Image (cartoon, rainbow, N blue to C red; front, side):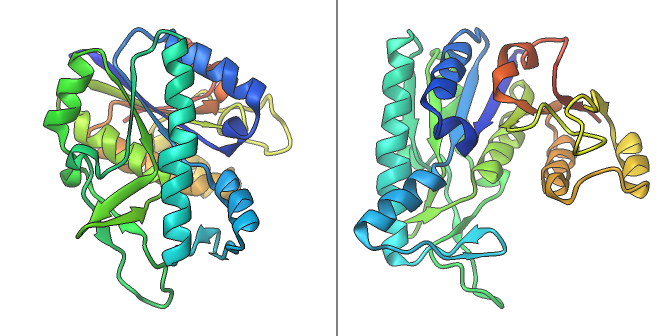
Amino acid sequence: MNKLFVIKIGGNVLDNPEALKKFLQDFSHIREPKILVHGGGKVATKIGEQLGIKANFVKGRRITDADTRDLVTMVYGGLVNKQLVAQLQALGCNALGVTGADGNVIKARKRPVTEVDFGFVGDITPADVNTALLYFLLKQNVVPVFASLTHADGVMLNTNADTIASVLAVALSKHFDTRLIFCFEKRGVLKNIEDESSVIRLLNESSYKNLLDQGSFADGILPKLENAFDAINAGVKEVLIGEATHLLQNVGQETEGTLIVK
């Protein structure tokens, strides 16, 4: 089975022009099939302030009212996505910018109201991915670049970029040996949050549970680890959590970040 890399970049890359330029150069050098997933929250917040649209968060998650839905559709699906696609084209990487609505590639369900009304937010599963279309594009050497937007009932929905990356990786694991890569600001999962050299190079479910019992992980990394093992248990071959500057090492065998396997 051929390899596939599903790579998610966060705001620490998107908000730094020099870091983004280096990342896209490295990304363009990956020869295997690949998908890029991005958000753009800080850009949306900044432009929202200029338009008089205030950002509201509950437990770190953006509340997407109608105005915010229109804002993130413009910013994620337009400004940020097309800038990334244009820069990749300049690097010889034939990128295609998409949201979940394009080609019906990810259909969602609007999140039901519970104790919090998140508004126009989409929930998705691997079954919601149009794998046939994505497989065709990847086989044509087209690189999908996903904005963190999906759709349902004719309406655009804001959807977490980490979730989109995980769902894409799981859905395509039937056709590829998939490595899901989360690029963030640390070199990997750290045993000691104060020590950048304490990267845990390899984690499986057994070692993860042992370290979890010992209280070795910072609270902030736990959601990413839970998502990682959910993806592994659903068919993804490997998950890598590491720094964007180490992307080329982290698509190889000798990784710099934390490689998570079954």
